[in-house]
Structure formats: structure tokens, C-alpha cells
Length: 481
Image (cartoon, rainbow, N blue to C red; front, side):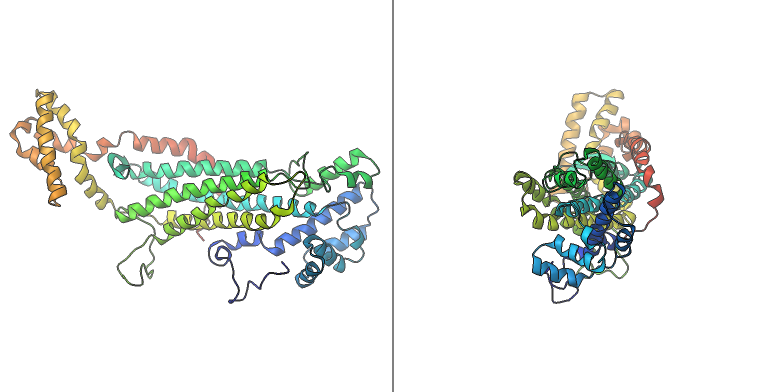
């Protein structure tokens, strides 16, 4: 902090995550003001609990601390940190400067991780609380899209090669299912968060046991009271100086998994944009290319992929940090965590903000989809044609050979001449197939090739998606960022 530049100046580096992509509310959760205000709140909660349990702390000291929670002199704190080379003690002194009566009891019995780690856990909880409704809104928008297009046939792809038909809505449900898993995982990690609590320098609570003259019950009550004041249901029983850095792994693993889901979804949208079957929203005055005025690039989906790649890599930081924490703690976690935790949440926030915008304005081109189906469906329908001929009295082997020859001729037209697939025209012109000529329209109806796709969409939305979204109904109408 003391060595940092002024991020408000145009000639100083500022993270694009804060200046360009993430929402103001997420940036605030990771701001210096929120962090150091939470430090002061923790010192107040600790003093209140210590007073309640009998330590000689006056009401005037408590009131003085309450009155100065937001009165943070950042310039003084920076100067103190430069002098002391210790960020927590710099803020102890800065808080004490505006609370002269309470100065002597601020941070009483605590170690730096009392404010540092507990604040991080509060920030992680609150940041997860910001992500959950945003993720739910994306799922809701895509669910609306899937429901509306549950019956619209489209060509399926495996290996990005034409495969059996599916529907536009069913394909969207593949995306939704991944995001539903992410929503459940984010909620689980949020609900599993525990407070570090009041543990002392190596987690033994020795300093507090001394303060309360060996009263074990009061030390436990102190830990419980501060935990409850911070809004947590549980605190760790066992800690070193810090809470276990495995927590950071769990949180960032869930966010990395979300990044993988978003990358897959937006890659699909980019590929479909190339096929001209689907596009993300494109604003009236939006410019796709500075050189090619006709371009409609999927820039929002590309941004999501770009940020998602960064999000997926960040989990490596807590993995390595947790693996090299020696004994009760080492400080080589600190600088790394300042970067990776904030960046993970700002990146996840930016990705969800952008994906909500995309999901609210997806454009589908049914005529293009229909044309591509017409190009591929004749080959897919050959088995149905053979079965119909057998039912009409034909030989399965003879029909198979006829279809094989005509299919290769039609494929040559497509691949060598660049023409349209004319297999059906060839079948219609061949007298051999006259018994089923009147059935060809029915045999080539795309909806007969989509299986139970539409029913699967309906059941999936009703049984899995809508119940999962129910707790977030009150925030569904918030527009995209």
C-alpha cells in the first residue's frame, strides 16, 4: 500500500478488471475502504465482546470506536505503514489517533490475522453473495430462451461434424445444466464458509486465556460472540495463525469451474455466429471492425472466453500457496492472496455481467438453420427411407444399394461441384422408389428426427431449473450491467 501508485491517474497502471470490466459493487467489496472499515468493525466487535465478558472496557471507549468506523485517514495510514512496515499496526495507530480514549484497548489480545483473515472471509462471503444472483439471472434468461425454442429443430454436431438433429432449446439446456451445477457449487462453498474467529497468534487462544485469567469458558464465549456478530454460524475450532488456505482452493476451484462453463457456452455461440444460425446482441451503432464495415463480430462472447481463461488459471495460486504454508503459517501467502482472490471475483463478476447481456439478446435465424438441415437431412433420412421401402414390399439389400449409389452421387455434387444436396430429387426421379414418393415429406419432417428433445427441455426446466432459481426470484428483473 505504501509503495503503490495513485490508481486514479491516467499515467499509472490500473487493472482493467476494475476500470473496464467488473461491476462497481464487486469493486467496492475489494476496495481499501471496505477492507479497512471491516478491520475497524472487527476491533469494535472484539471490544464489545471483551467488555460483555468482564474486561475493563468502558462504554465511552466503545462509543468512540463506533463513531469513527468510517473516519479513516488513508494518508496517515500510508505514512504509518511506510514507517512501521506493518499494515495492521499502521491502522491500529490510525484508528487510535481518532479514538484517543479507546486507543489502549484496540486490538486487545489479537494478532494481525484476527482482522486480516476474518476480513478476507467476510469479503469472500459477501462477494459470493454478489455472484449468486448474477449467475441465477443468467440461468433464468437462458431458461426463457430454451423454453421458447424447445421445438425448433437444428443440426446437431459431434466433433463439429454434422450429426443427428436436436433442438435449439435442447442445446441451450446443455449450457444451463453446467451453470446449474456451478450455482449449486457456489452456494455450497458460500454456506460452508467458517469464520476464523478469535484464536491468537498460533491458534491456541493463549493470549485470550491470559486476559480472562484462565477462564476457558469465557474464551470460548468470546470466540462465539465475535463469530455471531460477524454473521457466521460457525467458526473453525482448529487454526494455525491463519485459517487453512484450503478454503481459498475450494472457493477459487468453484470459480474456475464456472469459468470453464462460460468458456464452453460462449465458444458455442461464436461457432454458431460463424454459421449464421445465432448471434449475440449487436447494437445499432456498434462497429464490428475498423477495416471491414460489414463485420458483426461476437465480441461479448469473445470477451467472456478471454476473461474465463484467466479465471480458470487463478486456482493455481491457492493450490501452490496452501502447499507451502509451513507449520502455523508463513507470510509468503500474503502478496499472492491480495492479487488472486480479488482478481478471481472481479473476473467472475465481469464474465457473468457480460454473459447476462448476451443471454438477454440472443438472436436466432430459423431460415439459416432450416437450410442447413435441408443440406444434411437427406443423408440422415436414408435409414427411414429404407424401412419405408421394406414396408412397401421392397428388399432391404436392394434398397440399401440404390441409396448408396444415389448418396455418393449427391455427395459428389456437394463436395466437388459446390452444389446443393440433391439426394431427395434423385430418389424422386428414380421409379424404384415410387411406392414411397408420397411419403417423402413425412419421412423428411425435421421434427421427427429430434427424438424427445422438446420433452426433455420441459422436464429439465420444471424439475431442475425452476426449483433451483426459486430463492432468487426477487432479483430476476435486474437488467444486465
